Length: 395
Image 1 (tube, one colour):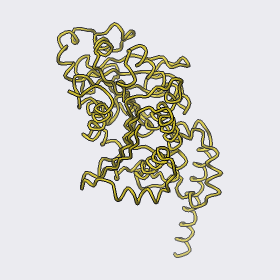
Image 2 (image 1 turned 180 degrees about the vertical axis):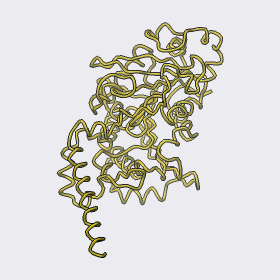
Image 3 (image 1 turned 90 degrees about the horizontal axis):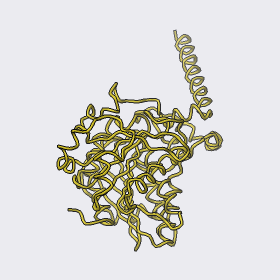
Image 4 (image 1 turned 45 degrees about the horizontal axis):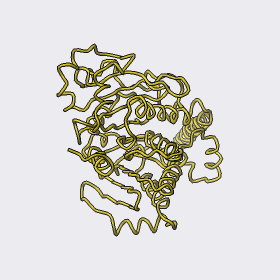
């Protein structure tokens, strides 16, 4: 009996090891990596039509579905979402327009309200992996983003290439090109000054937001936005896969982190590195050197099962070192933070680092998971705070 159990255990272990080895082999292939990182084929809209935003809880024509052309030719599906009070003021005319996808958004009342109001503010939303503009907690997120000024804060959200109705196949370069194209549409077609734009990113959208921020900060002359709000960010893909656990319990590649040489070898197969820790440093260094103001808010929940919250602490460390003339070790920064941070009990803690040019704010929440936090007041406050610091007075 004992020998039978032993044989069964050995067979089971062998099958598990074989399957794990097969998974590692698949992960070295770029196409499988793309599906694993971006999960773009998982729609999560539950048979709803994205061209009918009312089915996601919006008012008739509060949302305008349309498309923006990416710089390399692909069409990106997008939503322009009106703030609620502004919608109320113009409801009688808005509801008379045809609903659904619009081929020329410039003909719509909603677009004219975005383009023509001098006090307009715009949040450009960059979502995480999987799903579409209408999936999961993204709809409550849009409401939270505009809640701080429901007359003036519009939201522009879009699906990257390969997601939802957008054309193409996702890649790091491709997603960055898409986001840059959307931002340029906002500035050039809608005429929104960059000082009245906040970039919002969640999960992989934080990496996209930082790449966009860096890109424009390095232009001549530099282009700086009002700020960025980053929720559930990560340092880079290699660090993420070394810590990632499915549903917070099943390790994916973290067992291999115990074998540094093997892990480093497998890391060479990573196609899209998404090195946010380096991008945030270059963005801040460029802003400091050019004497340009910048505002960053990093938000993460301790109970995030998908991306451990210490990734945000790593990004904050990279940001602080870019702000300082002398480097500080991670351990020394944690010691300094313990003395200066504001503790909020069950609401978590806040740490701010300031220079004459910029503010980087780290908010570590006790609860909020990976997605739920997006609809919480902490997000509304982050947007309000940035606009109050850098834009026109909030009413």
